[in-house]
Structure formats: structure tokens, C-alpha cells
Length: 329
Image 1 (cartoon, one colour):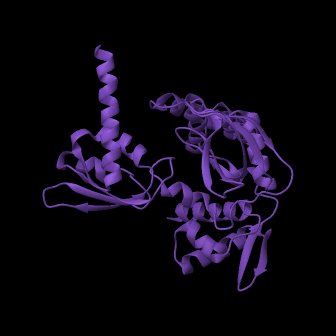
Image 2 (image 1 turned 90 degrees about the horizontal axis):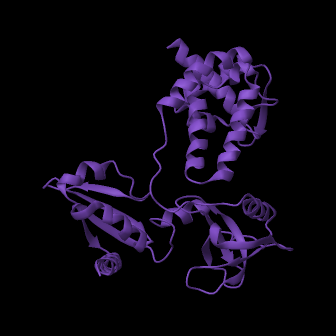
Image 3 (image 1 turned 60 degrees about the vertical axis):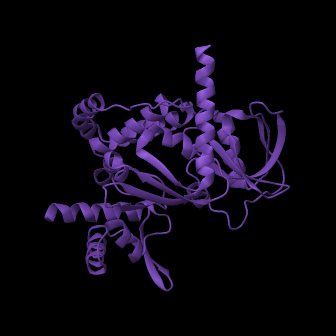
């Protein structure tokens, strides 16, 4: 128990050192997952052990921070933490995300360079063994690509709130020059710029690998004041954004266990049925991507609504049937 409390105290000190504005008591409660009285005791212990803690008045509350960071002793990472960093970089590398992989690999080198040699030597055998024992399973799908220059230009435009212009080429459509107010980036099976059209104000997504001649312009181009990237991403089952609808799926008893452990959507609710099946409900757009996903469930998934999802599934099945017929000719 004493060791657990020591770990909580050091972790709280790290939180104070990692925050530029400092942590309030509420922030500390969230970090520790503890009640107010326990959190106050942990805070007082940090104040006693780390005299460099600063108390900042932030009416109606206070904040505490440690400027200048902590020593290498308190900051030494564990082998498991280093493993996760190594795996994250390897996962990006295996998925074709060379730019994001290089950023994490650079961070890994900096962290190792900051560790005392004795600690690094002690950690190395465990880390090497864990790296050999774990790997990343790469799933089939599009290889997301992100040119380093393109990413830098987009990120610079986002930070400076400047307009972004580029040529966008979709398959089967004529390439067009677009001018947008960049809102952010979404990374997934493919990488997308989320931006507001400067003429209509409509929020749209653009695949990075279909963009060329990307350049930040002059002037100011801010996202809509009420736009939230996290909320926008959470509206859709995948990337495609269209009308948000109530989705209801019935998963047969033989697939119920898997469905209970499946993350369908942030708004999902699951209802247990008398026959052992599970009813899944959530609100989302992106019916075409959801129909593609439901292929993987075969006969275990029944679409109860909406009608547009049923139509998307029928169209996907018809397209697959036509492709099979062509293959048999």
C-alpha cells in the first residue's frame, strides 16, 4: 500500500510538471481517480517532497505547478512505457505512415538519450525481450499516406488560422482547385483534412493523398466558432458525413458475445434480448461505410433501421454480385 501511495505522489508531481497552467484540485482528482480528501492528502505530500511547487491563484480556485520539470530519477520511464512507444512507431511504419512513425521514433531517441546510462542498461534486456514477444497485426485496407511537406503546410495553416488552397482530384471527377478554412486532421484507414469551404461554409473532408499543390494563403480563415473536431468525427460511423440517423441492429445469439465487446459507435447502447441476441442502437451518419462493415458479420447481423442503411446494403450486395458475375465470364 505504501508503494502504491508513493507511485500516486510521483505521478501527481509529474502531472504538475507537465502542465503549463498547473493543476487544480479537480484536475488532480480526475488524474488520480480519487476522492477529494485523498487528493488533498496526495497534494500535501507533493508539496512536502517537492518544495519547488508553485501555488497559483485562479479564482475561484487555485492551481499548483512545478516549473523546470523533474529530475531524471522521477522521470525515468518503465520498460512497458518504452515498449508502447516503440510499438506505436512500428504500427505507423507498418501501416505506411512514414512521417508519423519518424516523429515517434525521434521522440523515442530523445527519451532514451535523457535516461541515465545505468537505468537504460538495466531496462534494455527487458525492452528487447518484450519487443520480440509483441508485434502489430496489420489489417487489410487502404494504405494511408501523408507527405511531410503537406502535413507541415496544413498544420501551419491551422495554427496561424490562414486559408489553405490545393488541387483536389477524386477518381472519375475533374481535378478542382479548392480554397478552405482548415479545421484539423483525422487519421484512420485513410488520412483526411477537415475544412470549411470558404464560399459555402460547409464542413467537408479531403483525403490527403488526393491533394496536391497545397499552400497556405494570406489573410485569416477561421473554422466556424461552434465547430468541434471531436464531435464532428463522432457523428459518423467512419469518415463519410451525411444525414445523421438512428441505427438499430440485431445481432444473433451466436454473435452476441462478440457484439458486447465491440465498439460500434460512441453513442451506442446494447439491449439484451430474451432469445440471447443483442440489439445495438446508436446515432450516426456514414451508412455506406456501415454497410461495408456489416458484411463482416454475415448472417449474424440484421438491419432493423434505418431504411437508408438497408438500401446501402442492397446496393453493396448488388455491386458485389455484378463483380462476381464478371469474374465468371
